[in-house]
Length: 424
Image 1 (cartoon, rainbow, N blue to C red):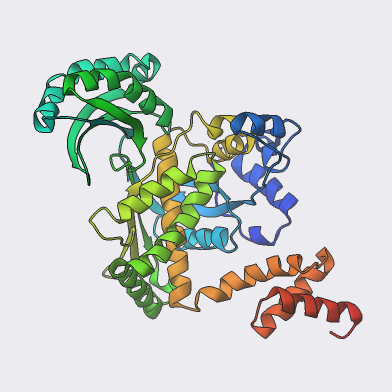
Image 2 (cartoon, rainbow, N blue to C red):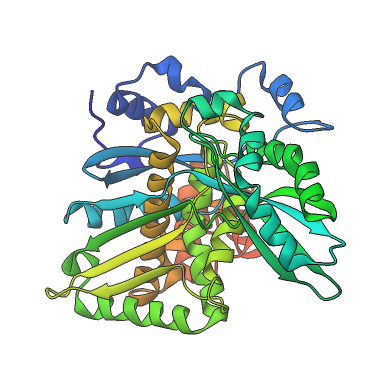
């Protein structure tokens, strides 16, 4: 059945009630999402196969972002994050974008680059051309390493040869361009690079050093746009405030770093929830932010003729549905099942939509009431729990913390002590 991502009052429910609501809204069986609520007895054994020297687990809260309509389809979006206000901000801005049709996305084919570095060359310019002359032979050798990927329509599609001037040497660097289909692609492209490296070295007349993928996945871009209703955002002044905040980030790298961190709050949460490589995605995004030689905003904002805010964004998004933690971690498997995605491209487009929603939510808070009001309201609950408040004390302690305007652990501990002694 079609998913309905509109979940009014969802935040007011208990965790168990929210889980039940998600099961009903998704149309999935409870068993298919059971990993959300219990790690299961076998999780330590799975973890021990995923990384080395395992001694335990570090659970991260998993929330569901509601209200998302992307290309006319509703999604319930799993987000894994420890930071307050992230899921709420994404859901809120998704509801605003929904008024004008939600998010509209597109993406490139899932193409990754593997680099082969050739050193010790006497004639790098001529070596570059010799490699091009053997292009077909190199691509065929690369594709012999993964016939199944080729059968799926992927595989090595082309190569580029660059001259890289380093401080002490001139290198020839071969870019092997590989369509990895529904994988993130690191293993596939690295295997191909290793295989063709000896032939590249022989053709070039040098020695190969590095053979590894690049996380600057600028041939694998995902794009998103959305219209945010002027009145739903808070009026003309709020829209203009968002535009001023964006212009600041576009012009100033110091502001852009925090601005883009807000985007990554949303992106990384979905990448992590689906078992993908957060560090690879973050590296690709930040390299893209500096692609023109100066670090700047990843997102762009403007106004339409009616005064509504238009947000757009384009960035590399190397994520997959096969391989890695996506296929071994039960929570990641349940997250992918909840999304109901059928391709890595579809997942990439959902992720950039969440990133844009998150960014818009942060800018709206900055332009309207200031970032701390909503953020600190949620942070106060964490402080109350850290101070030792019991379940029946948390709400009262949060209320008193917020009234004073200073949400600090020492103050929470003092208020809690006063509450318990009857002085408050």
